[in-house]
Length: 562
Ligand SMILES: [Zn+2]
Image (cartoon, rainbow, N blue to C red; front, side, top):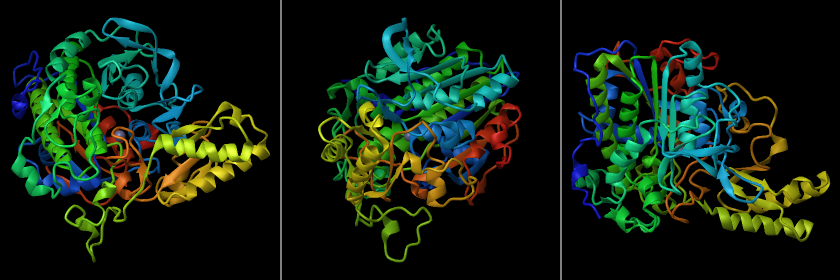
């Protein structure tokens, strides 16, 4: 085990060759950052508590902070969120309706999994190791518009997740990489290249290795954390994921799978930002039009295991803030403060942990008389466990149809059927689905269940925010499973990490659907403008296109510019 002491500093693992501070690269460098599961309500409540020299305060000071950017779809999950940000259209049009699906072998796999795509590691293609591609996406991305407008552009995209990296990089990235937690390394896919990025091996060794077995010992600022959250360390509901434990210290060296647990620590943010700098130096960012898309997921994993009000979640935000500040300083050194712009947002929000229901110290918005802008839930929600629920529903189907395997499983928000069930005569299938739907509606956490045939072909414009409209835009023909399950506020499908613990997202509610937006146009700082009224998710791609100096994709033309 390595001690955590070094992580108290903001020194990044990689600093690389730096140009003199007054250097100006010929092209603007645009960095888009998606903080996974950073709810608008979390940023709105916590921004003023963060350090004035932190990354978020800097973006707010030197640009525009939009308190509430709203997605127009109900499926508030990672793949649909990233796809909507980078395409400017909803899942209904872009075809990305869920994180995962159930495949023919009844395994839960990435919705981006492609039988034709093979993982590419530092040694090249790993034959037989099927991985992901962008084939499921039905429309162009921001990066695709950049490539079309400026063919020599440098496009770099990184994430812990395939679904966090692939939409930011588009169809022809220079480099797109994500983390393979099963093997514990960063990979790309033959869908993009058969040659690993030239910087990947040294990034793996020098950026990742120092953190592979480190211990997340304690909050960076214990007093600050304790003064802002009433949560105890190991609050009821917090999970122990692969031996990382529900209380500090969270020691990767003691975890049963350090490669999986790595994602649930703030170290992963640091490693990704270091890798981004390394990739930018290797690819001569700024000497070509440059888009660097970074998706930072530690915040998501930590909230999934410990909940958004935990000491760990506050500590993660504090540490992320410091990492971003160091990253922005590294950009200043390379390109000058005017030589880079940034657009930062999130892919979806989050819900409080069911165990904190009734605790008004942790949920002050549940106190009598409080009018909550974010409509955060106050009831104790239900965790819908994926495996037991799948088995329960299959047993219901067997009761209707007789022996066989009919329900393949749950990959939220959908119930997926087996090939045998899909081939049933329509009347038999309908009968079975009605029984499964009735069983789902008996769960206290289930709000609505829609069969794929119930979704209209055309949806109302994004501005219409009724539940029916949000659901319509969450679904795409021939993309999801058979039954769409909408949970009630505060209830959710178990995130499936520390099973039965932690929290998740996925509802149509504002606490899940609203995210913050920061726009820092490096060349013309807008100096601390705050936008309070909600605006569309399309502002993300609109402003990134502006900073890149390319025509805004048609889908986002009408969105506000800052
Ligand atoms: Zn996410």
